[in-house]
Length: 291
Image (tube, rainbow, N blue to C red; front, side):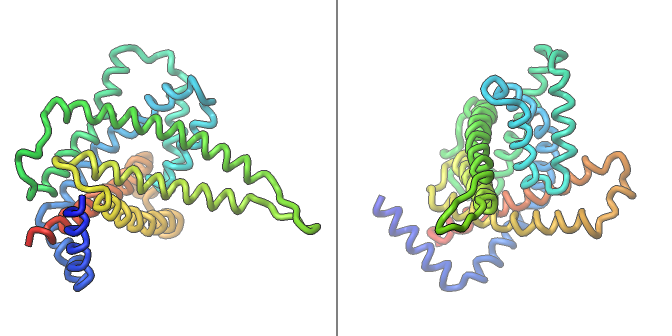
């Protein structure tokens, strides 16, 4: 433990000596690893996976939480992932759930398969970025086959917890505080807490990806560094996307009925690029200890 702490301190000191050189080298390595091409593959399979994953999660959790509350929570956090298009995705999700009786075993199996595709492709992309790690760190293929489904289970549990906490924050926002004859609404406070909850959840999910997906797990501090870098870049990107879709974009005129799919794919492509770039940050930080 002390050795790892000293190594992390040395790596941090080397990074702080010339942070811009570290950023430049990270960008060059990301390009050399064909990061944009990998991000495109991850985004494509994520587009195939997102709706089946949400359907399975909401159907399973609706036994404990009201479906409307679940859809409201899903819509709120889909706005983080697909800015400007969450309402369309939730509408399609609600339309399917209204006819859930048509789901048979074949459809259920196909949905399980498609919901796991993005995780499988993401693991392969991570192996390309972390190619410097030893081959004996690669996991057994059966473990790789089970990881997507374990991740789906964990994300469903996380969605349940977030739904319950978000409901508590919304209830808090409807209250008022009286002090010395003056009254303050807690609506603004609840909004800030919901935003911080979403950002903390975003960092936690990204860190878990960096801990689980690559062969040979990085340390928690490294995973958090990569997650924080990716999360901050995504926060900036998603606000730009919201502004772009709301002001300059003519995507509806160009693509017509395909608008939602194209816009969601664009958002997922940017998100996947930043996710893999965060992994590249971790990989370059690890290399600081090798040189």
